Structures are given as structure tokens and as C-alpha cells.
Picture (cartoon, one colour):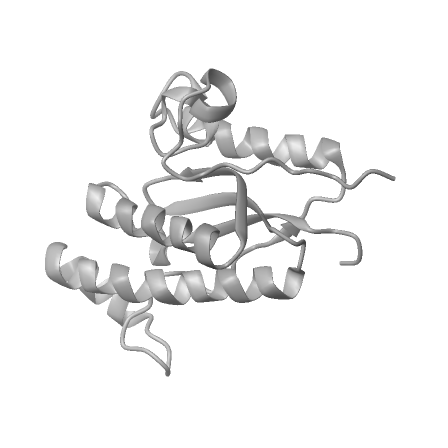
Length: 176
């Protein structure tokens, strides 16, 4: 999309399996996002890590959509391999089978559902709507009463000034 550089992105675990309930797989995501921020120019404006999916509002530091797409593809591939190893070593055989049954021709396991449901945030109103959606997700699911109480979210940063485990970037528009 021309003129759209900030995206709402969702990554979903295959069959909606609740993999992100222990620290190790959550840390795989956090460490990978930090790496992408430092080394690959990813910027994260808002995020939430739910038990079976992740939402990001993200953009490239230089607003390069091609680099953003490459970075997010590499993030998915890398975390998919790391999470597959985690599943093999730590989860029940039945969950391992679910990840193996949907495997594609180029891999033995499939962790992420295909696609990433990217939506270009074309207005400030749409951006606010998606950020609110991201932050309210744990509340809607009944995990917490207030968005900032969910540990793996940027809500604490935005609502209470709590340092986030993933560096949060503001979207700075160029002056006209």
C-alpha cells in the first residue's frame, strides 16, 4: 500500500495451541523481537503475547516496507525453528503430533499458522483502534482486569510508564 508504513500483524500458533504459557517460549519471542529491533531496524509500537498468538503494531525504522516484510518473515522462520525444538523437548506427545501433522513440504513441523494477517494502519483513528485491540486482548479473554496488568504487553508502558521487555518506539511523522 502506498503511503502506509505501520502495520497491525498477527502471528497465530498452529491449531491455536497454548505454547506461550511458560517463560522459555515467551523468551524466544522477546529475545527474537529485541534482535530484530537492534539488528534489523524493526520498530514495535504496541504488542501483546497471548498464550497462542501474538499481535504487533510494527514498522521499519526507515519506513521500508520491503525490509519490514523480510524482517518479519525471518522472525517467523527463526522463532518457528526455536519453538519447534521447545515443543519437541517440553510438551506432550499429543501436542508434538499436532505440530507435525500440519507440516509443510519444506519442514517437519509447523508452529505458526500460514500467513500473518497484516493490516496497514491508514489513519490515526485506525492505529488507535488496533492499539486498543492489542492492549485489551488479555482483558477480553478474562486473564486480567486491566490491560497494564498483562506482563507480556506494551500496555504497561503506555498506561503506567512501566519499562517493557521489548523496546517500544514512537511513530514520528515527518514535518510537512
